[in-house]
Length: 341
Image (cartoon, rainbow, N blue to C red; front, side):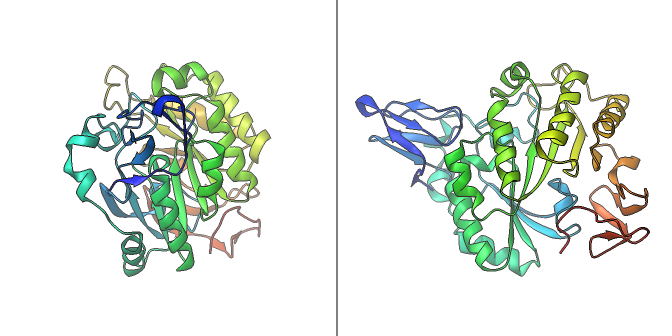
């Protein structure tokens, strides 16, 4: 559905500048943003994805991934098309990397609208405790996300943003008002890698993470181990940055890469590299490190940092055993950081 965008300013000669994200697209009449879903019409910026849901599903919250936020609960996940980054190995490229011409040629944008009330009602009907905004990057449907999250919050539901964190601070402040938890991709610790793999930059992502953490929101970070773009030095820098700039209890998910989209020239991440990343996190002093996209590995469980007891055992996204009581290890009473109820 076409709707006036929220973050933009008029420029000279009928141009508009989108201020939603660090790309800062300046568009002449009829120009379409890098995200593929925002257009200058008559000197105003419009989004064509307001309520144009391309995906909606009931997921375990562990799939986001969030392992320390209402662990084991169901979350309704929604998405609209488009993205403001262009990762070579995007696994959801069919919905995120749409061609600019689609915004005008595909009737989906004009005719599809799911009201925020419908999303919230569905979440409640399905017994979900939260709504997640994911699959594509929710930054590009921020206006819709804000309206859904506002209503969801009033009905007692939590809100989760799953994002690459590539967003400007003014927009982030508006989004954060009703957000409870974030799963953010910290892809690399190198501008060169961000630029060549994702067409982005590192610093705005770091600023996003620090901002939401400073507001007391629950944050978990994910780093996909992309061969040739992410090296051991970057992993060490990421682990140290989490420990020093955030806290040692922030969960860090290191995940196996599989080739998708335009990255079929890259191999899957070797298992030994995942093990090295896990050890890197431990050496930096991080308490909770998880290995993702590797079935049956021992690093899916949550261990008590004090006594080593396995307080949550997982198989994939399914919890098979818990040994906590009121957020504390039953064995030694140590407080396991997270939002548990």
